[in-house]
Amino acid sequence: MIMEKEVKASSGYTMLFVLLVLIAATIIGIIMTMNPLFLLLIPVILLIMVGFFIVNPNSSKVLVLFGAYKGTVKENGFFWANPFYRKIKISLRARNFDSERVKVNDKIGNPILINVILVWQVQDTYKSAFDVDNYVEFVRVQTDAAVRKLAGSYPYDNFDDEQAELTLRSGMDEVNEALETEITERLAIAGIKVMEARIGYLAYAPEIASAMLKRQQAVAIVAARKKIVEGAVGMVEDALTQLSEDNIIDFDDDKRASMVSNLMVVLCGDKEAIPVVNAGTLNG
Image (cartoon, rainbow, N blue to C red; front, top):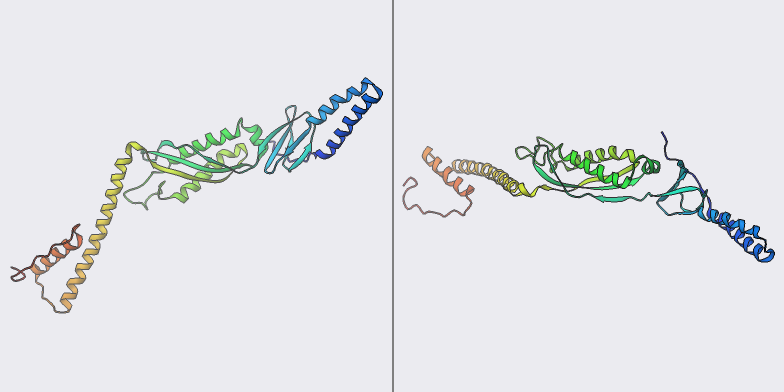
């Protein structure tokens, strides 16, 4: 299996000096001797000029000679190489990819909208240049495929018990880790290093968003009511116990039931309680 091979090219400044000397020699020779043989130096000059290239920071040049991979120049600077080399530029900079929002079904079949934010860079220039047709397009397509697979592996949410199962909404750290692993495996063939992958947008599809919002609100209301009732029961119990211990009032079963009923109504009601003055006895 062929892997990336980093090579060092010749200094471009040395060959530039040689080029200038040849140009000067050609011009002087033609002018002073009128010898047409000096014209033969022109193709040599042109070939030398083709060999110059520049490698910018965080960039590289893949050198190919008649279909044979000869190496990759990653060092920054001004260089010269065999004029017959084909020089393929590949950027080594980190890149951001914000995928389009795609509609997919989650694990339980609910349509959702999801996209991913990916930070990647080329790690192996040979694989990026020769193992795939277009490595940028390869990143886009494989990331989209990984997102679709991930969305189908987890439910969007679990209303019955949020701790019972990992979901896209509640288990974001675990889901992002699984997403990064999946994308890393897919992009390895192209020599791509995944620096970060995470879900950037997550929501129900418009056709069910309204119904799911109502369901979420209902679950929240039920949970809130449950907490209110639990708190009210504790407060009523404390009140009855305190009244009995301080001998403020003696409760029979009817009085206790009436007191509990009134306190629960006051504590659990949505509206403020309206007091009613009892002009008779407690049982009147």
